[in-house]
Length: 208
Image 1 (tube, rainbow, N blue to C red):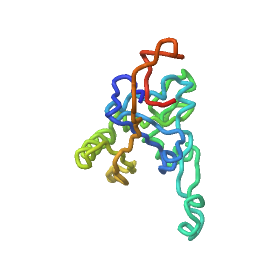
Image 2 (tube, helix red, strand yellow):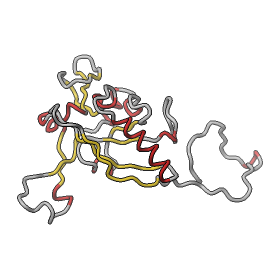
Image 3 (cartoon, rainbow, N blue to C red):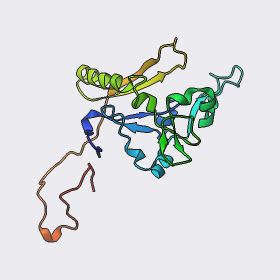
Image 4 (cartoon, rainbow, N blue to C red):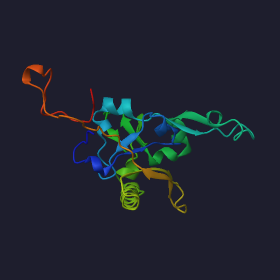
């Protein structure tokens, strides 16, 4: 309801995170952007805001439980790890940036000392993988096929080995359900003496 800069509501919004999708489902810190303008990150409007809103851990499968993976359910198999595990593994290079300790500037390289944050700069800024283009195309095709805006869930596998091609996996596509307010009866404003608060610049949908 509150698009920023050039964004328009009907262009959609995307949430992505490092690791498994539980981060998104549980509403934890994740990267939010418009696929039309992937370099605009409203939640990172300041260094303080960036530190507060950046994903700082991720979910992965715990593989040290012998043969009990399927019998014990999701809560037993998923474990939350700090970002330094992803950096040591090599996967943070596709998603991480650094708030440099020397000058407090965000650097899109892990070669600097400082706080690690999730920006997906190699993907969203440098287009190492055309994620935004794929999402825009799927949203367009989905709306044309289903007849209304759609919601999609996806996963991406990126490999450091140049011989392995990156993978985009579409997991789910469904109509986007947006609740609306049905207006009934007289919509005229009451007399001025009965108005408690009035504004001509209010945004958003809501009810009292």
